[in-house]
Image 1 (cartoon, one colour):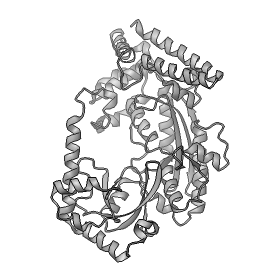
Image 2 (image 1 turned 60 degrees about the vertical axis):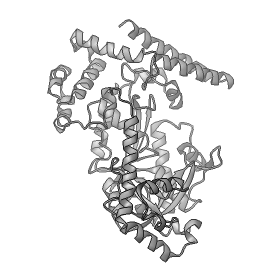
Image 3 (image 1 turned 90 degrees about the horizontal axis):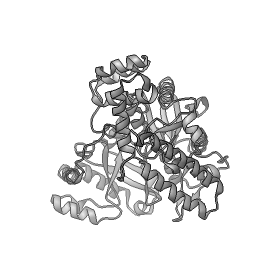
Image 4 (image 1 turned 120 degrees about the horizontal axis):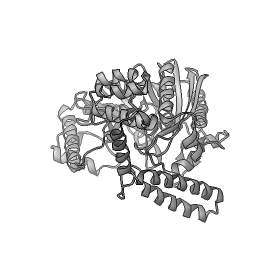
Length: 478
């Protein structure tokens, strides 16, 4: 890929109910030379209750949250336009595949925008943390690191930036975090010239699927209980190498284990015996999460594998891959586990905002998004009936309520406001942030700030508390 977009977000909450309020991005060429950038903030959307902890972490004042130049709707539009112009590109952040991508999915979904823009063809997506984990596991001198409380090497962005001598005074602001991610990736690229392209080759789902269907023996990298680990693995039978229920989960066999005793076991015997093994014999890699998969030579240096003859390793790999019944039994075990999990899943009705992965948006509606966004607010209101998916119609109503409430019919305005009030004034512990949950969070943070004699933080918490009170007052009279 000729271009890479290295990005970071800051949000009002770490759950899918929160909103992205800041995006920083640096566009670089394949040599990591900067060719473009984005540094933008938006206001929090009307009807949301923020997390006080999130606002403290990303240094967001109530003025920034409520009086910025861009409304949340305008902000998402500007970010989307930037991403479209940057394409085709590889999108990359720091642990972005565990957080930022998911937040974009749900923010764009709720904003009537295509959710998967950062990784739909021709775009690709990778994760700087995955690259750093592999580079550091191969060569512990790649980066200077701090230790976690448990004594393990930490690859957290702020600590890495600090150890490399970068300025971290503005850490947890999106643009600075994007820049620091870029600087760290430059160090890795410089010290791993021969492996850099190999680190990035799994940036598409299809590229990982091709590896899983091959006859290979590979080195893979995982973080296990805070420790960066490397495993020597082989592929399974190509017909049975994927999870039957979770299509993006692929399976590999850890070659420290002799597979022969397992090959002719019944499903129940195999299930019981696989549970007893530690480390696990089966390793999972997620094809949509850019796992690092490298040549076998790296993991062969690990003691668990270096003590084995290479011919024994090759024989084990051949046994696993050619034992169709054995691999089929593994798939049966995974299917049964998924079915058991599904039976225990709550049967409560999902709200529209949390159904993104339950049901695809019809192509007819995604095609309508561009026209809808380019229309006047009055036309947006008239076009709501054109959406085939009722979720898109609901999101459209809510956007108009937030951006141009004066054009809504009174009954529709009241309905939307009542629904928001029902959610945020709930006395229950909800999936989203309620007024009551916000007050409780502030009380806990106040106690912590008191113990530290942190007057500045106490002042910020008072400001946040007043803002929460103003939201409560607005909606309790609905």
